[in-house]
Length: 104
Image (tube, rainbow, N blue to C red):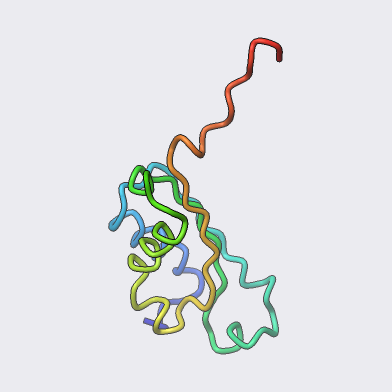
């Protein structure tokens, strides 16, 4: 798994999450450059941030949502293709901007 180039990893993350979850929106950001010199960066694993909006998170606690994401990533994390993954897992309702009130 670690033979996937760093430039291909965001697409791989996106693909795995879209395959495992009913994704309404996904944004994957490579933050590896922010961790230059970090032990995990030297080993080849990248640091990524993912925002996933999915109905699958409805009724799920934060830990359960993160577990769904980690399960979807599978061997990419175990094989150190991904050293760190920051997860923002939201339902569509949580991701909607607040509606303006009559007084605004």
